Length: 373
Image (spheres, rainbow, N blue to C red):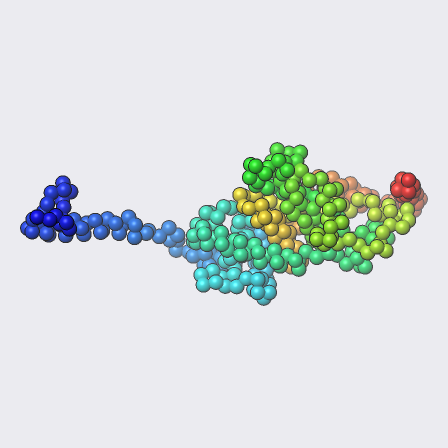
């Protein structure tokens, strides 16, 4: 008697025809068990408030709620999304609106939250969150090409033109330049170049900003050990970096111009810019384990959003109150001295002004002679 295809019980004994019903129940039990284990999945993101509904609730709620969550006012947020749609850099998908895509992106860079946290808050899978983070990052970087532009070299900045302390002495100044270290997550076998004077791995970012605290040039991705002078030299001499060098006829041709060119009394504006940037986007202080290329683009995107807010926000906590931000305490030392000078400016006599001008000329003469050696 062949036993091929005959049902077995769990003791491997043959079943006769009278046990067919038991065999069917056994098979049914196995199918139910398999369905529960492998086919039936309990929903993970089952909050009553979807991601889109959450964003709409924030945009129609208290003004401070949007600023606290997305790092910009409601009107600026809506305008930012509108510009991305108008320029066809982002569009509504089947499941996510542009507003929700941008909100998730800002939630990550504005709070340094991991994608699992964002996925739970917006009720999407982590793969969806990661996918749209990259899409929005790419779109914002493209927009940043229009937001981060060189200054007009033939126009005197209003911050200098209408300030008697600076005009006409600094009429040829168009901005301030400096480098800052941004946190970088680097594989162990590549960490040495990214370690400078500090233990942490960083990327050295060189920026130029105008006197109204907008970035006009950004180069990110340099190793933390790279010297600022080396980065400046490479950017200024390599056409690929598109360094916004002033026209040749703006080179210093006299002692006073050289003095203005060398003087750094307005330099603290770049430190204030860095302070506002890092305070608004904590991701720059502790970068997650993204690819190094993605980390570089995150810096550029943050600078672009910084400029967008500066241009379109009537008031902004970070820009209006930047003197209270810890990251710019070093810069405020210079600002404090300037404030003290302002408080006594009306009591300075003409003789004192003439004396200060003589001191300036003496310094200019010294710099001029040293430069001709």
